[in-house]
Amino acid sequence: MISLEDFQKLDIRVGEVKEAAAVAGSKNLFLLKVSLGKEERQIVSGLAGFYQPEELLGKQVILLANLETRVIFGLESQGMLLAVDNGAEVALLTPDRKVTPGSPVK
Image 1 (spheres, rainbow, N blue to C red):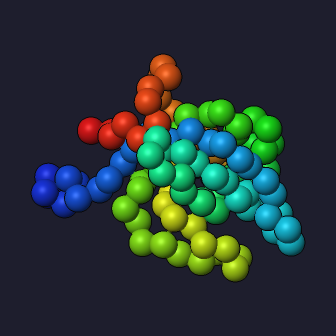
Image 2: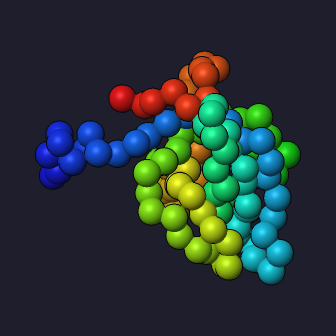
């Protein structure tokens, strides 16, 4: 269990995928450019095998925006997409209607 104060530290926002490409040399990774409205983030995500890059273009996603930058497969990742992973399937969390990129999730 975490406190409400700890949860409130999370900066969870809606993003929109602007670019998606497979990472050379990896079977599992995509390199994504995600718009948060006033800024764009580069995200390395393990969605290959569950999505095709073209399926992700224009898709609104839920992003943990204040995660420390991390280097994955030699590429900088500036956040994390939230998804359901039951071991057999992966499904991105998305808003149920279009909203402004950068909108906070509360």
